[in-house]
Image (cartoon, rainbow, N blue to C red; front, top):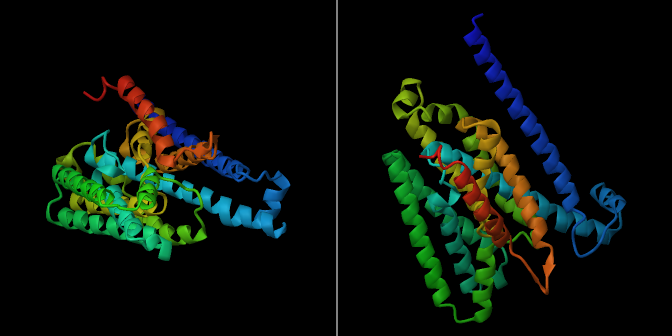
Length: 345
């Protein structure tokens, strides 16, 4: 074997084992963080209480706190973070734009329209699930528009422009509904929902959103080779046998469905899908297909950490989840841009 061939194989092995070690660390850290999150709350619980509650052998009150309040909150946060991280990595690879995030396709804002409509008309008081259900409906409408456009015109520029148009229209509709809100309480509820939260989420919320998030993950499963080929250019990707229209449809539809479901149960969460792929890219390289799975796990970790911060009382108030992710994500993203500005030119 020539020296050049040996070095190439060594580089491949290094990347392979580096990615596997990173995945192993992320999974272990995610599980440990999730278990730690079960201890954080207004009611202090001992480790033995947590373990017995998970095994169904504790007092009824403790079991309710752990299995019906804290555990669903942790699991839902991980699933939402994974959806945002995975979608962000897939969209950045598809659009070949490091500034792309799930919000660029307009699904998050469209989900917000359904939520504020439900709150404005008082449906949330009559039927609590009306907020996530109408939010999901708004996300699905945006998804169908994107899917229709993707089938007719698969160009990247068209997808970006359509997403921006949907997002702008949805934002305008949200502002219109809030402008006509006569009840200050309803307006407050709208604002709090738009700021994002995992508080008081139950198993019912997981049952509502999980099937859609999992469906989105499955749609994006196996697109790594296509993304790697697309990084070489559309012509090269087609030469390698990649169906670009089908690839874009899978990623756009998968991202829209999973992110729409995530937003429907926890509100708008910014910067996770934008920042996470950049962090992973700095650890294992710029191959877009290799970023997907690590970005999902890191997204779950970051959102779980952010949710822990929301449980800290500041005076008599608690921070909302979207506020925490914005405060952490925006400076971090500016730092990443500063460090990588030469490579992005």
